[in-house]
Image 1 (tube, rainbow, N blue to C red):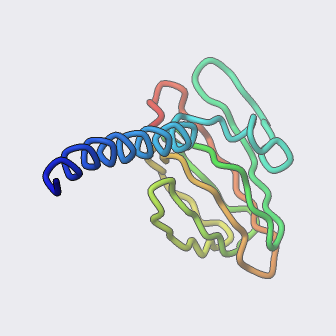
Image 2 (cartoon, rainbow, N blue to C red):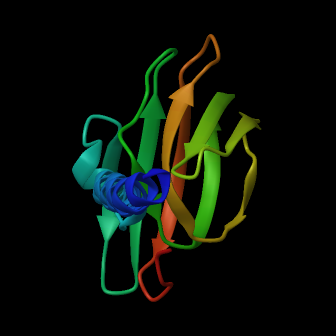
Image 3 (tube, rainbow, N blue to C red):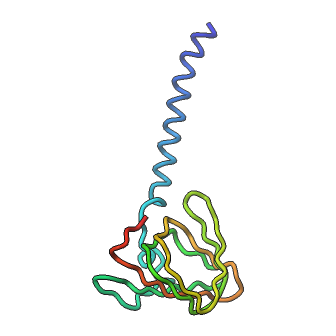
Length: 136
């Protein structure tokens, strides 16, 4: 009798787990797709210039503000207003960026993430997105 119960219960448990995994993957899918920062957070991201090769955007984030999940193609950035930002990736990994005024560097493409200003001052930077660089 125990064997009969196990045979009937186990397959349904496996199906339930498969269904749960499938539903969770559907919920996570939008986070993993490329999401244009300008479209999902237009209050923060302003297009300063755009042509066939690049798009220049300015990101401004007030203290305590959190941006919607977005991605970035590879590009160059320049910090115009220093501050501290917590970046949380779709996989749960977090990093803290303490941006200094005048800091600049090349940035590889960024996968889906949210950005939160955890400092006491507004942070702002300009990002030159290279259109030929693939998004993650």
